[in-house]
Image (cartoon, rainbow, N blue to C red):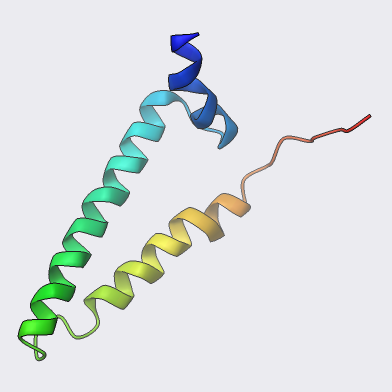
Length: 78
């Protein structure tokens, strides 16, 4: 039962636990850096002018656009 808690969601998105860990950690790291760039941009408007929006675009493409290209399991309702 505990193993299922660690593997169910990664399997739902077509990843192993390890792959999901790496992808989630890389997303989190990029979000933290993008957030820091946005805070610094707020203080110093001439810095990181496009960094926040570029991070959002990159993460959206990786999470939504590229994932939708992966084959999805068929769900049959009887």
